[in-house]
Image (cartoon, rainbow, N blue to C red; front, side, top):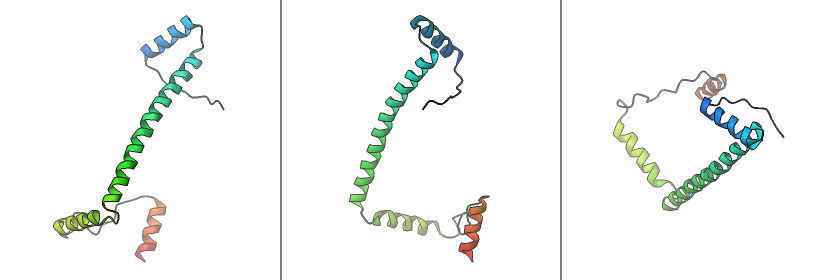
Length: 110
């Protein structure tokens, strides 16, 4: 399904597109669609590879610490070293103007 989109091009890009369209006797719309399709395909592959790398690192971390004991110990040590009076956010909720968040906080505080 085709859908209309609006994009702003830099003047030099627009001039190049106009010239190629004239020289190749091809519509600018077709040239832009081909260029964007190539860009999406190339970047989708790069993104897929990056996500695969992150997944492998997460799996490796999970194997090294399956119950997250090291992470929990690190968190506890950090909290203990800060002390109650050194943590400016201790006991404070993050502000939110969302009505849903405010209602949830009311229910949790009840």
